[in-house]
Length: 159
Image 1 (cartoon, rainbow, N blue to C red):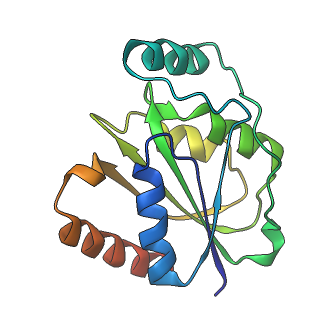
Image 2 (image 1 turned 30 degrees about the vertical axis):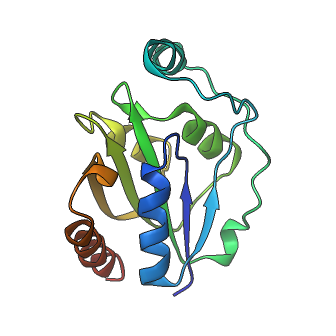
């Protein structure tokens, strides 16, 4: 099975998970990048990111370089922003239509996954969601245990 991991990562957590999945599945990875690459922190990040979610803004992203048709399994990863997928992921899903694919969904958060999977599933009709998993502050935890958790989850996606 040919697999792709498509992710948006603001502070490296989603990228860390993507690289671990890539190694396990021998998958190709594709990072979603926004046109605006300014790194906001603290209150500025909270206001900017939360504002994008609450006002339904879809930030411009760099043109995707993936041919969705070439993959059997697609794993999508996003940070959780205000209980939702990061707006850059929403932009990607709006621009690149994914249908009739096996999908795995993951998210990274500092507190709660909120309704991120429910909202992503709503953006992905006509696909088979094979599994979902969330990670709380993955880069701050027990890395060997985290990698084992990812390996076990990835095995369930191939069913």
